[in-house]
Image (cartoon, rainbow, N blue to C red; front, side):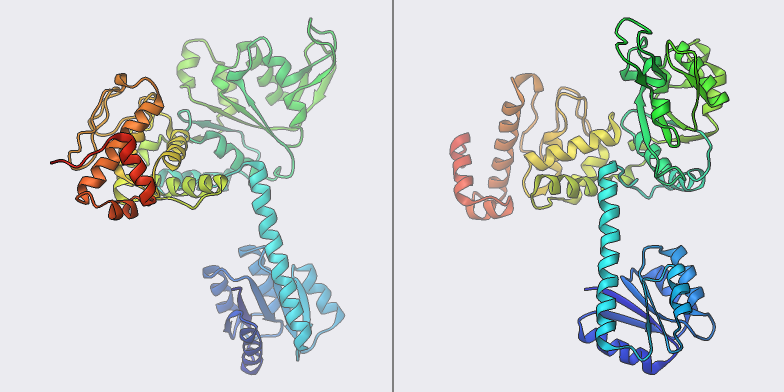
Length: 468
């Protein structure tokens, strides 16, 4: 149900509009002045606003202007008893969706409201699709460190300052770079990403600056480099600590003079590029070891954003995990699974050597292998057996047993493959649930959300028998 706000200092008009709109099943709130109206817009997610132009305390045009700053996509329909063509044009220029005169024609009013809501929905859908296409996900979390990163992005993104993003693998450095571009004045221009660690040192210069035909053996045609492709936009140099010294020298020149030369070329090409860089290395130590140029470090490190390890912000894990649950289940076209309190506590206790990327993989594994509700036992059972993830007192070759002493403690070496391990975990889980429910098959099937016939098949498959 769409939520509408009416701002008008005439009680009779507010009452009439409210009665009409509520009859059409809209949720309606009204207020008699623009100042309080703006406060309501800040606090409540309205889908559309109908606002009078001539009011006490604050003129409707001023309300429109300030509301556009607060929520630029909120459709405004301006209403006035003294409407002129000039007033309508002015309202449109300031961002109003439409303009209607008092007293409003019923059909015109309802059609305009419906069209305004449709337009708002289209804007929202377009942004969602654009976000999906650009792979720019929200930076999740409310911890102090993440709040500081978000605040820094808001301050730094609109400037031309270069940013060095540091942090461990999988912590979200690329996401920070994407948001710096998304919120910059270059957002409509390309964001070009280069993983310096993935490109052989002999090819990195050609990748960044391009090459002319015949400049080396395999250069059968001219190639445009990443700097040129990013012209007018942003160039993100990921894992810059792995860049060769010769390439570093050329990058430094490009940053200093805003000019590049293709490999094998003599012509200088001007480029207008904002450079963001990221690394998981300690660049100051790399400078000491002679692997990184100090002058380039200072050029890149105008603003430093450090992305903390996931274990340094465990309070953010529930929010991130829930987001992954919803997104992955949606991708798989299945109902969203839940994680109970024990399961979430178990997730927070893991060491997360792979950071947020590892958490994403873990949630995907739990969705595939667990039942409707993900429990502590599921987290213990399906913690990555080959990747070093462990919990509590578990070692890399041993995983703790299920709650209640079900005896599910075993060496990973005893399993030939993951299917064997999965069958073992499934058998112990079902055995534990059956014993807990005194072998009441119907109750156990309901609790673990499978059909009784399916549970009977599992009992037969694993040869489970009730203790004498």
